[in-house]
Length: 285
Image (cartoon, rainbow, N blue to C red):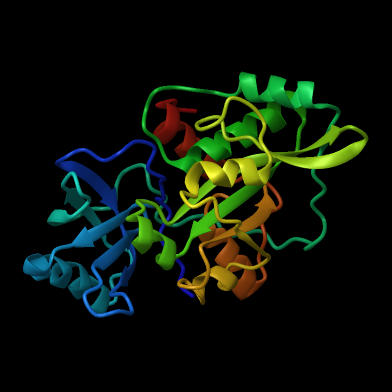
């Protein structure tokens, strides 16, 4: 397993020629079959590719990794097919927290999510969430939606992550390796059900299967996991994985640190909330 940087984002629209991403490198995947393309999994959430004749670009990236510079940042330019055309090493972006506050150790079973009274109430929360036309990072949107439902309505939501396997990414030339959204426990027909609240991609609360079908081109059912290593240690197994977590989780690194070191957030870290507002909505708190 590996702990990766704070800036993660999910692609919301197809990349255009000359797209520049400010990002770190999560992993480089050389494939497991002869002729497989080299995939570069960016901490921005994107999956970029390297042409064989552009091997020097990969060398430039790997040089920093071999030197132990895991916190190095890059401006990476992609063409219309998501191949890397240029790589530049840069200073840490101003909005990134270089020394994040330590996670707070909490009781593993202390988090109790709110059960929303009805689908009508859940739909009301969905309609009230912030929206804009700006491309933004999925984990920042999810943080703001969760934070504002808690602040304005005292609702303790959950979050659901979908991790796409390398097998799925390669089969469909898929552009992401993960996505995150809040979800609610909702009372419906006398039962408590889970409803994804992804304001970017849905018009209302959706079941997990309805939500994953938006992204799974083969409509595969995603395996539910309870720890991050079930994905990270088996990146080629299956098609996709789902993992539940609480509303304080900001990004997958939180899940990894919880598993590795036993730390767990039991409150919002306001530096993360402020960064989320700035990136997703250009709001300074």
